[in-house]
Image (cartoon, rainbow, N blue to C red; front, side):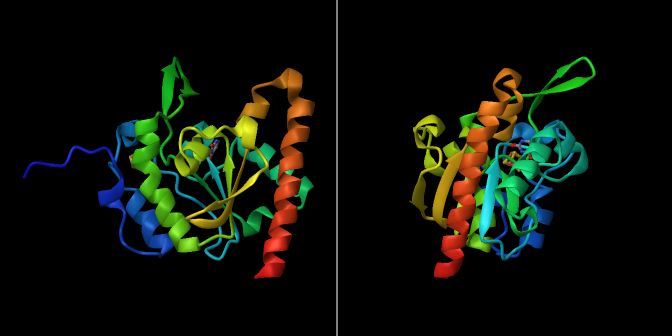
Length: 214
Ligand code: URA
Ligand code: SF4
């Protein structure tokens, strides 16, 4: 048989809305090349009845080792900001646009490498399956990779952060910066963290509105 060479997770994604089955199936995904060097797949985490889904870029070094999203430095900053904004992380489903860690080896260190458009598209069927299973009121894109996956490559966080859009896989979508971007700018930390917190407070207010309306 001649195999379809298209780079996509589609053939590994079972037709189910059962998140446990999806998670198990994702471990076998060979939809792009990123599974080859990563320790394990890092699937989304959180309740099936979550009203809000947060989407990051891809697992980092610590996530790759532990098998859970946002458990490293960026995740700790995200948890702190969510707590300050009044968002309960326990009630939110957290995932990534790309499910395997992409990195460059520098001696003993593994340095984050940005996923490209082919990898983001290849992995989108998993994100679509997660969103189809949860049917959230609101999807929050953390950074440009998540926004590119869900809004297309012309979307600009700088222009549209904090604005709410309709979306086919959720009632609404909003984007803000990635917490790693704040950690990468120590000299501007206070300002960038303040803007991030402002976005998360807008999100917390919108979540309350959506809950009242439903
Ligand atoms: N950055 C991400 O985008 N996702 C994670 O899970 C961790 C760091
Ligand atoms: Fe599959 Fe996504 Fe991993 Fe690529 S990154 S192998 S598409 S799960």
